[in-house]
Amino acid sequence: MKDQTQKTKPMNWELEGVGQGTESPVPLEQEGVIEDRSEDGLSESFQLLQMDVEYERQEGETLPIDSETWCSKNVQRKQRHWQKIIAAKKCKRKQEKERRKANRAENPGIRPQHSKRFLKALTKEKLSEAKHSGPRLCIDLSMTHHMSKKELSRLAGQIRRLYGSNKKADKPFWICLTGFTTDSPLYEECLRMNDGFSTYVLDMTEEDCFSLFPLETLVYLTPDSEHALEDIDLNKVYILGGLVDESIQKKVTFQKAQAYSVKTARLPIQEYMVRCQNGKNFHSEILAINQVFDILSTYFETHNWPEALKKGVSSGKGYVLRNSVE
Image 1 (tube, rainbow, N blue to C red):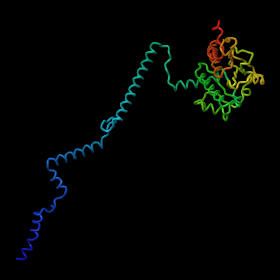
Image 2: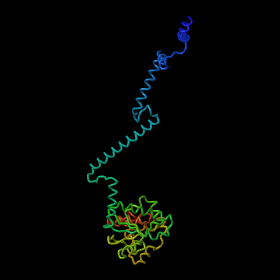
Image 3: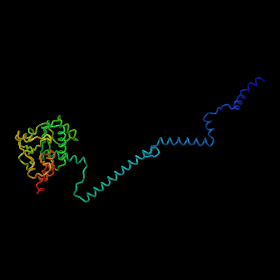
Image 4: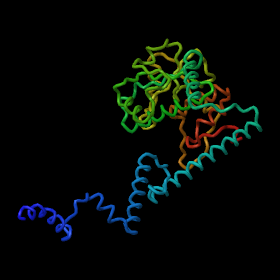
């Protein structure tokens, strides 16, 4: 009897464990499923499954740039503003294109517009040809060592304007800067003030103009000369002194030309213009090198001294054309 009682005891222990509410050997995963069989538990499970699916789909897809879901309101506002700008530019280009088309239809003789690159190459070619076929003009820069920094800055600006006028001319001159050293303050000032100065289509040399060309071909343009310039000769080399108003001394360029036995000439201001009355009683024939060049360039294209002088000599110099007074 004792042996039978001991054999059935383990079974009774298992039954007691179940009856007393001890932990069930059911796995935790199955436990969660059993507990979630209620209505609220099922709803929450389906929501979690749906979020997982959406997350996986979003990881594999690329959202559009203008997606309102992932962009803040500030970003969207900036995008709309930028789209308006682009649309306005497109509309403006379209209107400009239609305007040019209508203008060409009304004026068939007008040349078509070219690109900036083409015009730049055409200008460079035109300036290069002037070295062989155009009139020659030297800017004598050998007298700049006595000039102040302010005067050098003004001279650098005059050189820039002179070169700009020559680029626009239908018949450009060949420009040569003589007595011009790369270690001079003027050279540094030209680099500082003039964009692209090192690529100017002209000659720059340290040599003096009197040693660079035959003396019999030189004509020094100075307001102190007794001889008026009548015409521009392609066989001559015309010289302008690189000086500004503050540093000009009486007959400096004229005396330098005489020292080398070089011919001199002045612009025919006295022949085609007269002095006008002004409050300061100021009259001057001294012009900046770019103003002198504008006169020479206009005359070479038109062969009309009054028209050329009117362009270069402003009323501030105290002169007006003779015909306008009469």
